[in-house]
Image (tube, rainbow, N blue to C red):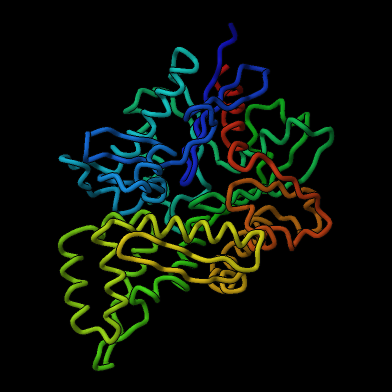
Length: 419
């Protein structure tokens, strides 16, 4: 039996595990039922103490089960939150421990599929976990490595996620191309200029073929957040003032309610007291009644999921609606593609800037790029796709497996490194 080598794509939104034998084709293993992708989510039940992962976690939470729902944990790596603990059931856990718990589940699925778990693994990482802070970025990688090592992986290597996506695509080439790899994930957007060819694919060390990399901490969840803040949070009090008209309500309560990895931190007695106090002085207390409903019913993630759903619908339609219907609250907020694009202006500017940075660092012009490889779930949003390809009207645009390309490439990289 051929020795199989392992690559793990721990994503902000979805995760995959790939295997590859030396000289063979990579493939993804089932990580949740028959699915080869799993949402990067966990649910800790307060009813029976069980832990659910992926779609099961989302289902438990959306079904109203009592417990703690966590998602987008990758976004926390390298931030100050990693130094804190959070209440999970009767225990307090570090965020590194929570990330390890999710990796443990991936390792369990690998063992169930393969019968044993390779001690060597290539983990994917964004070009930048943290923008403009090399120390924090290195800390983020160290934290992910520590979490993986704690769960039994002994030899751990890292590969940039856009490079991994390119490695899998390269297997299909007959000639050399100069490619821009566009990887729009749930939490980060990475851009790499690479030389790819069948001959170059034979080399293990590809550093000379990577002409440049750039990235920004912008991904699918950021577009959700901006749409939420612009169109939905005003219905919960954002932008409203006190009765005396002297000041607006503090914005951070609403910004955090629109941010996936911060929503859980709002479910505390202190925040409830704060909102009660604001209700007494607000000019529009009925809006804060809605906000209080989110706190008391832990509905923040359910609302965020509806915002994400509307964003996805706007990929194919000019209009959509954010709809949250549950006992005690009915909210229907119409949104248009134009409103979504306006709310996303700053994010798109960052993406365009990162692409320009990649071209300058590589010493190439837009006209020299003959292939643009699109990967990541966020690459399907028309606004993002347009921003990523508009500089390259003559280039071939290649769509890879939007959720699986990185995992496949990591497995291929592992086979080349460890064989």
